[in-house]
Amino acid sequence: MGLAQDITQTTAFAEDIRLIIWDLDETFWDGTLTEGGITYREDHHALVKELATRGIMSSICSKNNADQIEAVLRTHDLWNYFVFPSIDWTPKGPRIAALLKQIGLRAPSVLFVDDNAMNLAQARHMNPGLNVATPDVIATLADLPEFAGRPDPALTRLAQYKINERKFTAADTLGGGTVAFLRQSNVRVFIEYDVEAHLDRAIELINRTNQLNFTKKRLPEDREQARAELLRVLALNTTDAALIRVRDDFGDYGFVGFYLTFRMHNARRFEHFCFSCRTLNMYIEHWLYNQLGRLPLDPVGEVLTDPTSRAVEVDWITPAPFADIQAAQPTPLQRFDRIIARGGCDLASLMHYFALHSDSISEEFNAPKNGQMLRRDHSNFLKPALEGGLSAAEQDAAALLGYGPEDFATDLFEERPDKPVTFLSFWADADIPVYRHKGTGLCLPYWLVGAQHHDLIGKAELREAIATTDVQRARLDILCRDFEYIGLLETDQMTKRYDRILDALPKDAPVVIILANERGPLHFQDPARVDHPHHKRLNTALMQVADGRDNVILINPMQHIAAGDDLIDLNHFKRPVYHRMYRDALERLTSCGLKGVRSE
Image (cartoon, rainbow, N blue to C red; front, side, top):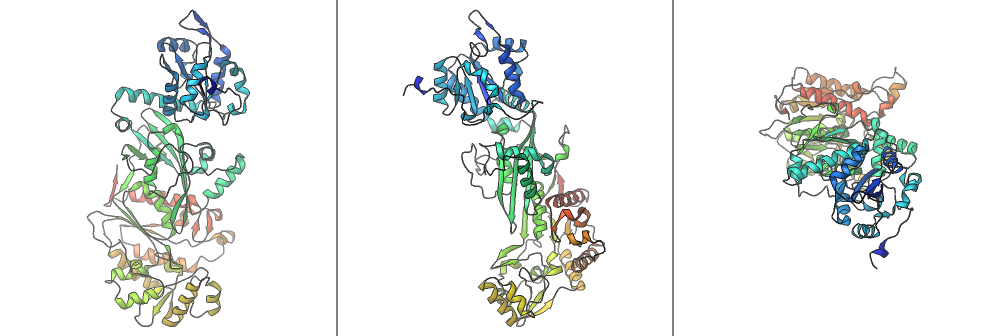
């Protein structure tokens, strides 16, 4: 098939058009500028401006003298409405290919209008999927559904493309390669965790991005349904999410990225990981992927980059507090040499936010194991580390209930030259009973869902009701045969144990302890309802131990729970509560003056 036969002009486009590339002579205006002059087309002028208010960009690919073209369009106050104009005497096909790469758009979302069939054929041949048309289509464009765009009366999208245009010009001038240029560009990333305040932008990124959308899970097209669905997911305590805003010395790109992860048993997976092409080749997605702990990511469909690649070390991005978005010089982000966190899902939620603040985070969280949940937030799992470890007989006793030597290991008490910030949560101490092995005297916490703070040995009906697998039933039989019920920790046991734990940690490094919530949803319905007694007892012990220790910071979730709507249940809060707890902890860590805390 010849090039001329490769041209099919149609006004039925496969997808919405995001960019028109204009030829000028005998297309945008009548006549040829270098051959006797032109007649300027005000209708085409008005169309370029109208499309810009819909977020649809215009560019130029013309064989002409660049200085003359710029002068004409500046005279008509239209020059700045064109992005990445390409004006020289070289073939148009390669220039359009370079333009699409620079601007980060797929050919099917672009229309090239030219009066020359050869130019159209060459452009289509070198850019498969490119929409091409002759000038007679121009009068119909404004009314086509593929040109509806989205309202942008402030021309923010145009402004962002112009920023990218200035960057490419500066990069060509400075030379030295992309990475060298980025290192000179003062790239700052602001992470906005208050997604609800910018919900429509999050929806737009989820539903409209393609080439840098790595999950491609869409929300309903109906805007109200999309808002309701995203708000529902954002409220979950197992959801972590944020919008990404980028600035550099060339300007503000706005919110260019969004991620949302789900946690199951404190292991996270991506639900959304998507970015606008505005920041293509700035490696924002690579940097964020690293910050989020390099979660498993199997890109869906065609994408332009591979965030999982380690080929480039992204060292030119500076994270900054979102509160400083308008500041000329953002506040240096608080940094910690090392973080160790041991506890339950409450700390898993907090560590998502603290990931920005340290390159070294050790997480010792609850996790499923051998048919049950290993509750590392019970202090009994720390006792062996304080007492020289388990004997062989005690290891055998622990194995009877599905525990292994690794379950009693911890990084908390290792001597290191750096000073870690330690986060602790002991919520299981309040509710999970302890059982003593008859042969060795080893005390172990044990529970199954539905039997919190109950005596499993003394309640046969309860054992039958909660055991759902043969493994669980066999283990309950062993519990009844080889162990005896001791019950919940006494208050004096808690205080002695917590004193011992804190004495084993560096006195000049901060320790953040999360208190338990004492009031669930029912308490907000009935203010006279008695506070949760087990959680109240745990908090009393923790506050007693913390008294007089200058390095201990207590974070009370009840100070960040305003109403019953903030709660999922007594132990699980909606996502904004954890963010408020994080802000509280960060502020107090910043002002504590202890080692291991610095700014950068």
